Length: 144
Image 1 (cartoon, rainbow, N blue to C red):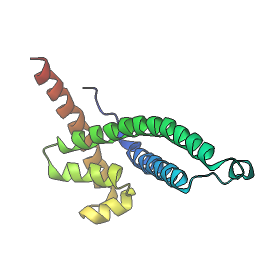
Image 2: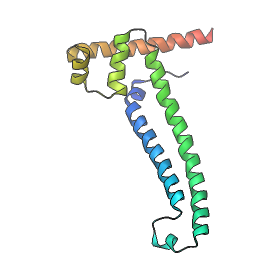
Image 3: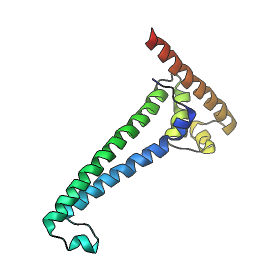
Image 4: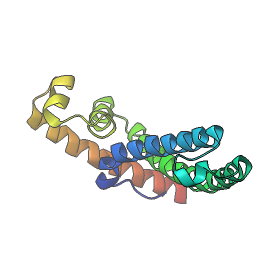
């Protein structure tokens, strides 16, 4: 298991948005195939069976790449969520979740947990250290 970095934590929200975008692409492809034709003038004037066959082949190829990409993205987000869950201290877990999973800014995060922003920075540093420590301990136990 590789260690989760702060960069990976920061990319969590972007990964979730990309997953949603990929799912929308898959839905759009499905809708397009059900309709049976594309919207361009040229494809509307082709024989319907040829258009449908072409769309199905295109859809299958794109779906394969979309689902492979989805699988990779979801495994990355799951890794981040599992790493955060492995932290023993609930306050530190909550800070990492609010900051990286929910994407709260520091002042809103402080309001939510009832601490000033400066204290949130301290807890955040402690949470990152704990995250690193729990991952290192997990690797050491795995090697034994």
